[in-house]
Figure 1 (cartoon, rainbow, N blue to C red):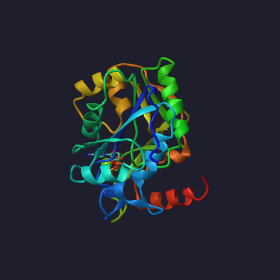
Figure 2 (cartoon, helix red, strand yellow):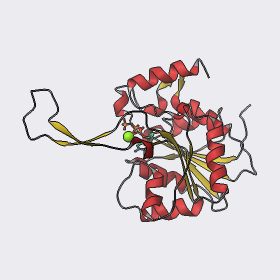
Figure 3 (cartoon, rainbow, N blue to C red):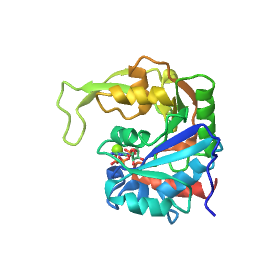
Figure 4 (spheres, protein in one colour):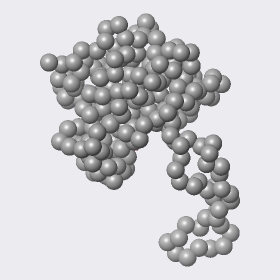
Length: 240
Ligand code: CTP
Ligand code: MG
């Protein structure tokens, strides 16, 4: 039986899944690539649908795969599938257009973060419900981060001609994940005026001058981007 969503929930989750997955290498759109025998998108949607506050899920699929994605997800959860756009931001805008006004909170969640636990959707939604117009899950940065610039001396062949300009104070830096949560009207207004493409939705809200609050992220919410991430995700499935 298909799990039903909570008809009294106050959250819609937009799932941009229309990317090509170029950094993952050949093998078709990333959302449809297999992880332990099932498409990444199935892993992702199963976890979204298990979050108790979720009333609606909208997936932005690759334009050529809309029918196939509908069929794929029908047994997993009730999902609205729309055709995505050329850029992630456009895919999010197209998915947002399918959300009715009466849903107060909208979360945006990358299909590529396929192992994100249901609890993270709840903690982001709870922070929006508590009054933050925009909320992002974050993790501390583990590597030392350097600012670099072009070197004045010519580097040996094959070596980047860069020089260190300084070391950034890591304690004030955070890696940002999804789901990112918003009051519905805040996200709609941010997308309506968005001029240049950003890699996350909270960036649009920041540009509008509104505060963006942080909640603790999850290591399981890693973005599957490169081939090694797929290996790591498959290993994680055996221990979670
Ligand atoms: N995405 C989307 N529409 C696009 C581009 C990306 O819906 N035009 C989605 C991806 O499907 C993914 C999420 O946005 O779930 C984050 O993007 P990313 O990890 O960069 O995925 P891809 O764009 O597919 O990968 P790549 O950049 O390596 O091609
Ligand atoms: Mg991309």
